[in-house]
Amino acid sequence: MRRCSRTGCLNPAVATLTYAYAESTAVVGPLATYSEPHSYDLCEEHALRLTVPRGWEVVRHDGEFALPEPTVDDLTALAEAVREAGRVDRPIEPPDPGMGFRRGHLRVLPDPVND
Picture 1 (cartoon, rainbow, N blue to C red):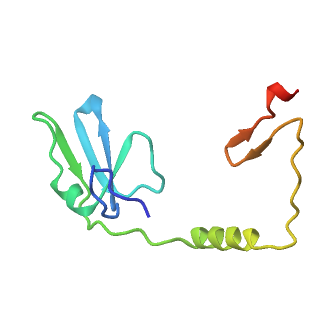
Picture 2: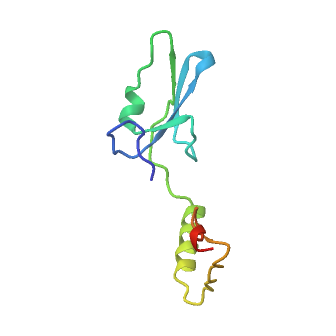
Picture 3: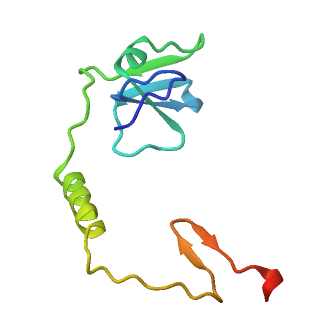
């Protein structure tokens, strides 16, 4: 579940705010499927109370804002990840000490002093 982007707000996000700078417009619509770098997730309170600078326009979604329901794809992916992590027959490859090894996004490199 994504949280509101406003500092200090812990409420769940139900809307996405996007700015169209060329048109001096702020667009508040339903929560986007994916979090984008140049948009902001907002809770219902902040989505409804948003104000913009003088001369700007706010385009707001007409319907109600609601929490998104999990999709079958989300639940299936989660179940498969849990099933894969719990397999006891999963092969574990030992790292090649000369090449370092990856763990997630980090890489462990051999100590250059001992080479």
